Image (cartoon, rainbow, N blue to C red; front, top):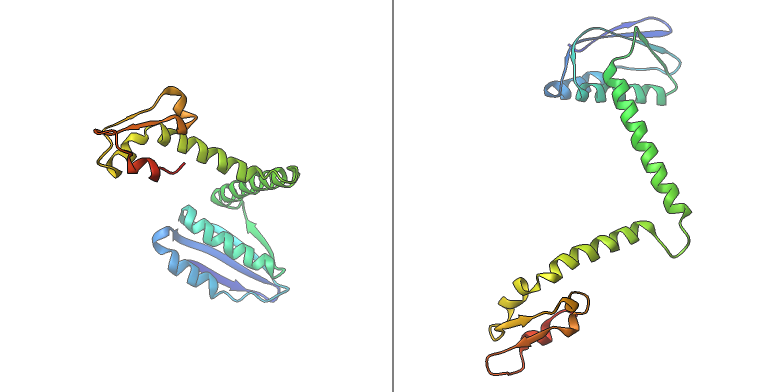
Length: 180
């Protein structure tokens, strides 16, 4: 048993007991879902009986608290709330602040310049640039007639300056299939 319930007319007392760990999360969630919380009641939670509380158990407790507060029920702890709950709240608050900052940057960007798409484009150009410099590794197997692909240093920026030579100076089918 993970929760001992004591009911009065206006308050529900919950005493958390045992080990609230990831291995027991299904039973913990089932126990918390079975607690009937009527609107207008207050919930007082005691954690003195907990022997272990990992982050999975703290997450289940946090979801229970959100469900109760969403119904307008006042939730208090006898003693201090577990540190794991504080850790989750601080982490999620930091994540919310980061998301809010990113959203503000996107909304503040001038029209026509999407910073997210700009970042994706820059990443794609950088990734393609590293692959383009070593195009001999992916292009050579495509055409058996290509003996040598001579690429000057300027060709890294201007691929149209690349040269393809064949044994008999025939037109190389690879040259027509290159993606530029």
